[in-house]
Length: 270
Image (cartoon, rainbow, N blue to C red; front, side, top):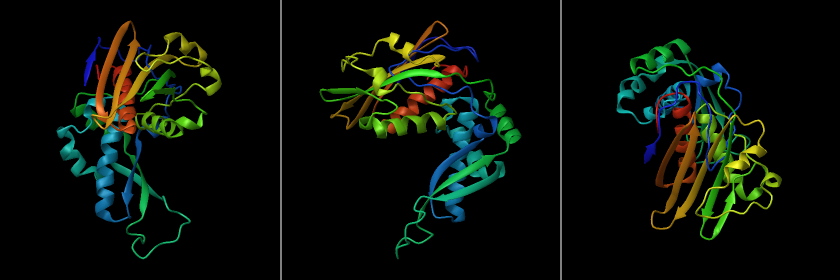
């Protein structure tokens, strides 16, 4: 992965990317201190593992500092993640479906939602010389292109061909405390796409509520058995580019939106 571009002051906005993603006016503060993961059953061991995963996500979401992802310095805090928790809840992913002999309550998948103590999370961030990013988060106007062989299309808000990518992109944005706004199929219209180029930056004008613009391009590579992901973000007069390869599109979106949060929060280049 590589990046170039100057640092962006905290609170400064202005983005350009292959993906046009729209951030909402700002996530509710309480939501920033809440995270969700999937666990198997409701046992204590799995719950503690879930707490640790959610703690890392919340630290990144609250601060915008994507560089904390899988940071070894988090290990001591993750080992006692329960000390930072104020509440948690389970949602059975198979609710309404009959339990099988080999899949009782112990083996069923659950969405575990965990809420953390704000003061404790803020104090923990201080130990890493990081601050909460609590200023209003801008609406990101963005466009994401997917290329597979000779076929290239945009992720839109209503086209069925991009259903899976749209869901994954929105989930990646939510994970980082951002909201995504995508162009509709009618807005895209007959826009000609070249598998090697980004869509025109002027396309962002079709999303009037967007305060910043992100563009990104994912290309399938058979040799890597994964997606090559390229991102470009223009913010506050500086151009930021980063890329990585050999990942699923879900992971590409998570890294892409993580990079956006890191830049916008003033925590440096991805």
